[in-house]
Image 1 (cartoon, one colour):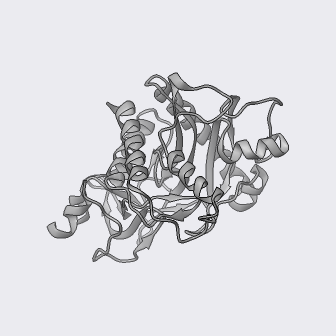
Image 2 (image 1 turned 60 degrees about the vertical axis):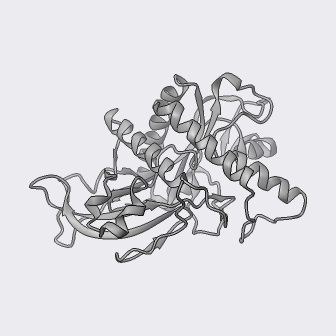
Image 3 (image 1 turned 90 degrees about the vertical axis):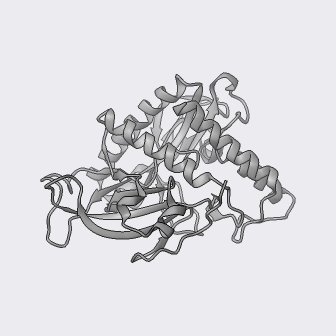
Length: 320
């Protein structure tokens, strides 16, 4: 597969996240006869991050896998009537770029509505692992949510819980926070709505994945509110009042996927996500060869290959 580490396109206002490069596009009507809507081009590169550090070694083909999985989940979520999303199209031709600029972006790009993003990551956990397992061992709680005693690592929770986190800049660690702190950041009404939406999306996605041999243990969402164009017009009277799901949806980058048939509480699970990479990096930390700070270490080819194989398996099981 070809590899794309970064982009430099002739478009304004380039921003670079851990994985995605983002550009402004000219406002355009989303549907025939509609008002102009500000748009963005989001390109999923083959960068990969762990512990909030971008690794120097790209994962060839990862951006296309993420885009395919995410865009399918966006359409699934919309078809279920759960919430609107920011996705307009994955057809790079709609960006109006030259053939030379557009060719490397095919299959790894989304054109989306420009939204004001809520600065809180909406994390939902249906099972206990990762940082949640660590918090539970220390306090019996995750982000202030009290849980039953005696849970094992990998146990299914009595019900999905909402455990928000701060959304930090590249190179800084996101921080788990309680619901009250999230309300202070984004407003109580907004966070109550996003909590309910997040749990509803997680529950529907968990059922879909479970039927296909996968356990969606936890995931994180981002939401935003569609912006108006410079003329003050929006797509309908409620375009700025109701949140949209933005960024990505239920990818192996943002979610923890386990093999349903091999699930056994009490330890590490057979996973199809970044946990494979995290385990390798934790081994380096244990040996004193890395301190979880930038720059990240170069990744050996067996780790690169193992990571992409797991992402491919998620795509295959979920969507055939």
